[in-house]
Length: 272
Image (cartoon, rainbow, N blue to C red; front, side, top):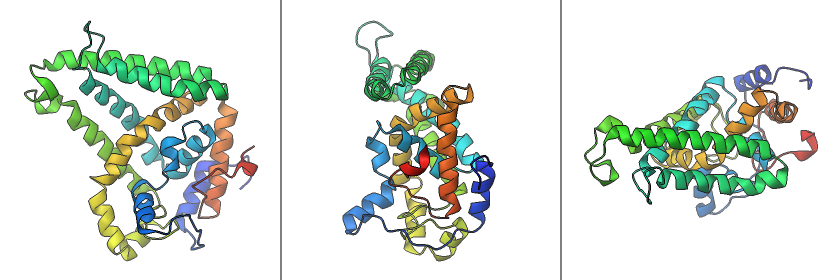
């Protein structure tokens, strides 16, 4: 593929036949295998300061337009309903609630690395989105007319915890459109969905059980790093930092040409 090519088309072509070249990853013990089976790429959960890696892994694991579109809906939805649940905990005035504390914590968490990377515009947009979601979540709390803690007596469809789970599950299930990644596939390589269903063995059963349980937990926890990643992509759609985001997309497409993209680091020599 040339660098001026169409990344989406090239990735789609790569999904037709994923080769069997083996790539070894650093997980040998049962415990580490379990951690990697559950979290796939644990580093992405804590290395928030590596924006290259955050964007790169998003492109690697969300190549199908249906999966990507689902994430564009589920990421803000999970944040919103998490705040709607926390809005019931007040600390004084009506608007001073747990939802605001959650928004402030996320804003402070991302401020440090946004400053180091010179991405203050990204931080301002992220904070603006969080404040909007906080106001909407507080309005949801008031509309639900809670008369007891933890939404016990609220109508089921108004319970934000239910929606947090359903959107996290939907985000998890959207990965069915993608190749099955290393460790989840029972091997150290990506495999096609068809191959996994034919020869996945116990890992196929584990995947079925894990989809509504352990993997849904991952989708919920991943919102911490996916929210600013989504904001960065939305900014790029307006022209801000577009060249940078496109360079990451091209890198992911080139990696998919191999059939077995690197997932535990960014091939930095190829990024710029």
